[in-house]
Structure formats: C-alpha cells, structure tokens
Figure 1 (cartoon, helix red, strand yellow):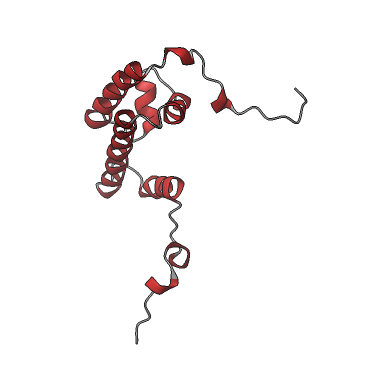
Figure 2 (figure 1 turned 30 degrees about the vertical axis):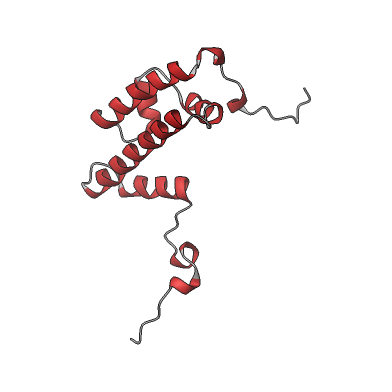
Length: 127
C-alpha cells in the first residue's frame, strides 16, 4: 500500500464472523432496553455501556440492510435516542446546542430558513 492510499476503518471489523443475524438481534434487544431505560442520550454511550463500539453499528447496518427485523429494531433504537435527546433539550437535561447538532448531523437540518425549505414554503407578511 502506498502512502496516499486511504484505508476506511469501517471496512475492518474484528471477528466479523461472530455477527450472525441471531447474535445481532440479541444485542439489539439489549441496546433497546438500555436506550429506553438508561440515562444515555447518545447511541455511542449506549453501545459503550454494553461493551460495543460505533463501528459495529455501522457494520450491522451494512451487513443486515436486507433483514427487516434487524433494520426495524435499529431504526427504533435510533428513534428512541433521538426523542430522548430532543426531550432532554426541552427539559434542560441536554444542551439545546447538542440536540441541534444531532439534527444537523443526522438530517442536514440548518437554522437558516432559506436553506431548509423550498421557496414555495416561505411566506411574506404585509407588515
């Protein structure tokens, strides 16, 4: 490999063969329980508490994208944590800046209205 070649860390997954659909689903059930009942607002924190890491989540999404049961549970977990973060910001348990940052990162949200919606959705007032 030459010095200008880049190796994507997401392409390397130690012990990838151990991630069968059944094993992943069991881990996801544990992750969902921790996401729902635990104090964490962030996926990375939940994964770390359970002895996992963010690269595993990405690997599962790539590997099991055609498994409806796994994908549904992953999307549900992401939704639980997103809702917790937004509610946490509203209740001042999480910095509103962190919640906005999550929206920007996950949904390309911006606080600049002219970049968020098509022009047809912007209204002028007579004031």
